[in-house]
Amino acid sequence: MTFTPLVGDFYQLESQLSQQEQEFLLALRTYLETEVKPILADHWERAEFPRSVVAGLAASGVLGMAAHETAAFPTSAVFRGWVCLELGRIDASVATFVGVQNGLAMGSIEICGSPEQRAEWLPGMGRGEIIGSFGLTEPLSGSDSARGLRTTAERRGDVWVLNGEKRWIGNSTWGDICIVWAKDVADGQVKGFIVPTETPGFTAVKIENKMSLRIVQNGHITMKDVEVPARNHLTGANSFADTAKVLRHTRGEVAWESVGVAMGAYEAALAYAKEREQFGKPIAAHQLIQDLLVKSLSNITASLALVREASIMYDAGTQRDEHASLAKLSATTLMRETVAMCREILGGNGIVTDYDVARFFADAEALYSYEGTREMNTLIIGRAITGHAAFV
Ligand SMILES: Cc1cc2nc3c(=O)[nH]c(=O)nc-3n(C[C@H](O)[C@H](O)[C@H](O)COP(=O)(O)OP(=O)(O)OC[C@H]3O[C@@H](n4cnc5c(N)ncnc54)[C@H](O)[C@@H]3O)c2cc1C
Image 1 (cartoon, rainbow, N blue to C red):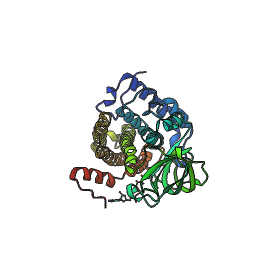
Image 2: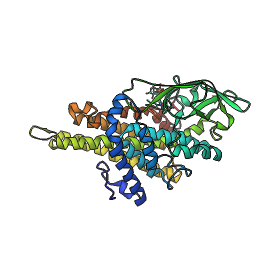
Image 3: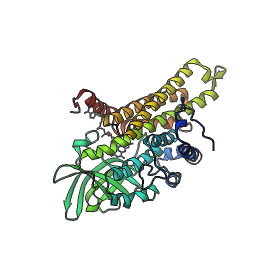
Image 4: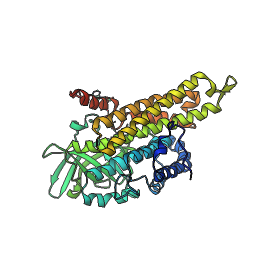
């Protein structure tokens, strides 16, 4: 197979990857374009997740790429970023599913779990046989989850008892386990637990009527005296600082996904502009349409350079929270502007899902807000550059 550069990768940065990495990405791209893309619009309309893709994603090797227990070969954060971009370029919901499974659920076990916990859970998750979710946000605590969690965990003998509610939890309505973050009543610290969703007292109800990421199944979780064995407490998840380690890793990947979403919208808009004729010539030949296309490409190219640099820092061990925050904040802000310009290029057809741009346009809104809103990431960066925390 010959590696073909993406139309939206103007400086052809992906071509700098190794041959093994390029072959992996090309196989993934081929799978996504031939098997996944054709079923997206229908599932988006029906707000259903196409579960058939789980086996395909597992077979293509994207689940569990970061963990040595599950990765087919050692991967860098830069390469995993390109995987996120390739996923986002086809669909933000599929990218989000992988982000939750890989980054949030497996990532929590990988970063905070003991060797025994890693061995017990990661291989099955990497094969797509165990689907995970990540329960941090609550109905009354979103941006302030570092201090505002109400869900409690109480150690009673050899079990932990969890009580509380979680909101927006992706994959939780149909997944097998949820990583639940709860405050230990004994010391007030946030701790992480692996909770099988079939545990008595655990219920997850699908959140309906979404206008963004309709394919992703987000759940409202209620936990009433949910008992989990003591060995399901993630041994390295004992304060919110441990939760933050997981989020720093995933924030960078959401930034890459958002570049992919912008790229998917741009490529669709460019193809449309070359086909669609008005005033006797393709709209691509009109100066104002070229302006929208070039602004879009400029946003994508700038974001790509930024997220790549942030991942190089991650691989070098020099990335801090504010670096991941700047990548997420900037890439999602530019994505939001880009998908709006691409939607504009399609005129009326930009608001129907028959053309991919409407889906990218709507889905961008969720990426803009989840994993830290623009405001929260601004405050994280603001604290780093001024020395003043302005959260409250
Ligand atoms: C589609 C989707 C999927 C999600 N998936 C998951 C998941 O799998 N797991 C999970 O745990 N969570 C998930 N979330 C939750 C997501 O992380 C939160 O929505 C996000 O953190 C914001 O919290 P909130 O919605 O409660 O908004 P709020 O915290 O209520 O914020 C509302 C507004 O106020 C602003 N704001 C808040 N505090 C300040 C301040 N101090 N200064 C200035 N502005 C402020 C915010 O930036 C925002 O604009 C998901 C959300 C969505 C929409």
